[in-house]
Image 1 (tube, helix red, strand yellow):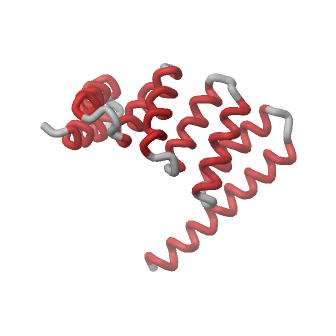
Image 2 (cartoon, rainbow, N blue to C red):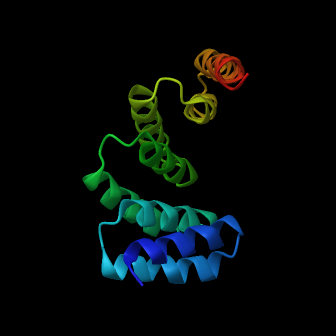
Length: 147
């Protein structure tokens, strides 16, 4: 099997929440192609699920070396930092995700929580409002396109 095939099987198992099995396939994909960003990202999601935060961080930083403009990698890294209670780093990662993708509702929601934990209630509320308005605009656009 190719790295892509191992990744696809791992991603399918991840979707089915068969995490241990998914991890085996993702590891095989990464043995063949160590800088395979999609596999690094998927494996980081599993590591995050099991609180293996240092391993998740390592995979995401490696993936970001390959795709520094990928907002989803920055978002996921922000989740890792948030779970590690590294709020400044989490804030930086969520900011980067939002700067790269200004309509990233999940990143606004996550940044809102960081602000709240930092005692910045006003900024937290603004981000929460922004997340809702982005979601609403996206839903309206989808109705127009999908009519």
